[in-house]
Length: 634
Image (tube, rainbow, N blue to C red; front, side, top):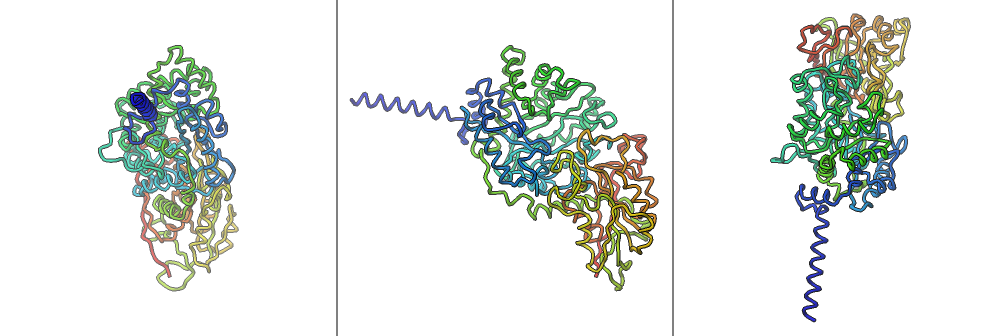
């Protein structure tokens, strides 16, 4: 009897040990590599390919997640649960998808990703920060704080992954994504990779190079994009060919990737563009050879939206070929985003027929799981509502307002330094030493009272919107009204004629004009003109009264023909929701300190033209920016 009992106890002990071994990948006390290897060893091919598949929210469901072992979901630009969905609504749909993923045999949690590229820009009521070109103009704003604020707002909606930052080096402003680039200067772009520790947390001392890092539930996984050379395409045409030798590619377009990897960036997104005729999504030399092997990047490589499709021209012309060359090139996760069954079937066929080796699949899955483990998804897969009050918080809006102030570049301020127009007086007073009495001012221009124009593309909708009902924020017109003395009359007319201006005895005028919102290829422009009726507004107003022109744009635009009319000129870029930051500086509560992050051309015929070029003859050179001294008025 005793021997039987001992045998039973031994058997029970062996069962317990086996059970403990089985759960090893779920044990947070196990080393990272042990958890990864243990889980990969248990996975079927179907489960592995599911981990490599990222689908769009609109085709996702708990049932789809479970049936196809889908490991990743994203929100495309403008995709949302509802027009003004609350943080709780986002959390509910994401948790529903996550429960589907967790109900699979191995319970591997999914990653949910979104383009939070200037704040949590897809989400109603979020803080919208200046686009990257504006942050590049600051030279001094703490982008790590902006990253931390963005991470909190993204997590507030239950999302743990953002496709940011864009570390492209825009070399031609005709490119429709130029505002997503911090600068034409790789050194500025390198400095701005500090956004990554803001998003993810500071990587621990002694952490192995290239290993991703995410510091808990208030941080998100980041994505350095678009690898590599996306900002150097011919004539700035989006998704086109970047012709440059290897030295030039490594010197101009690659440096920010070195910094990103050192800072523990979790993921890298591949560019649609080509390098010397080879599509980046098919470039094994750079994706595997350089990024993974030379730079020792240990996170995962993800495609852009339908990136595999665009390996061929026309897109999707030979999808099985695209899958083969893309995965062999070193892509780990595929943003499908809709035709996921076709992708799964093609990749499964190719692995089973030894077209793609299992070793390549295992490498991809290990990288994806490595990121999921460091994100803490296995321990905390479901989102809660503990951070919902971080969405659009006043603290974050104040941070964005500060970024706006520091991003403004003063390009002209009167005909001489002795008689500057800025800063503007904001009170009606006869008390000296005010430079002038102000009783009535004119605000004009299509962009003065348009929050959508102010925010630009990638705001609520992919291409951006016009109007003031897209989200919560402060237009420049309202900011001006908030700033001036109550006795000062503010007259707003979008496009007044010259007679109206002359007959109203305005003390001065503020004209706010610029570009309409755009994103990606829709923003490619060979003329870079200010949108109509902007030029007409400038000449009508500035020809009749002393004026400051504020340009809202994602890049330098044609301004030279109107410069003689303009008394003061301000590049405000795409400032986002906090237009009060513009008024703060116009009226002298803060100084102008911004410097041009890129060269301002005289004519588009000069393009491309970057600092250091032999034909360099700008209207305003790279780094230019006048300063002012703030003054207190009484």
